[in-house]
Amino acid sequence: QGQLAESGGGSVQAGGSLRLSCTATGYTVTTSCMAWFRQAPGKQREGVASLFLRSGTTIYAPSVEGRFTISRDNSMNTLFLQMNSLKPEDTAVYYCAADNFVGRRGDTYYFGGCDYNYWGQGTQVTVSS
Image (cartoon, rainbow, N blue to C red; front, side):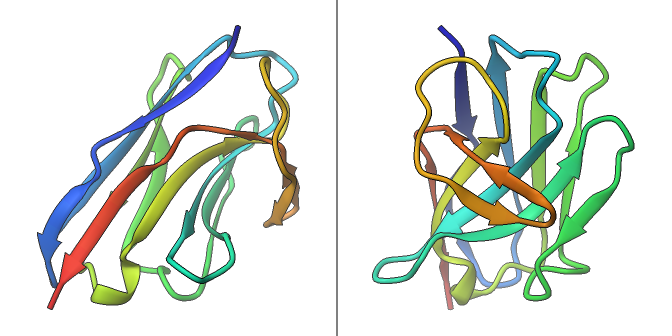
């Protein structure tokens, strides 16, 4: 069974940095896009950053452009989100997502040209002022 597993969340003061990781097991060759989403209490889940695996093209939400960087390791089984200059409004549960994967399919959210259907369990990021 495939799995997306996030790690690296935590609490940080405004202006600080965190690096999230997502380890993908059961990776399939049909996976085209991977992304990070976030969901704050009482708000809808929103796309933060995405990566097209074949081209390496990245897309960022305007709210994080210039502060967050999405990347992957050479073996293509770990996705990262480097978050710098964090703000209190970045506080949310952050989810790793894939368009196609193995395992249980979840709700569909669209971001940056892809529909994302497979999700990790999420990791909490809390930024204090």
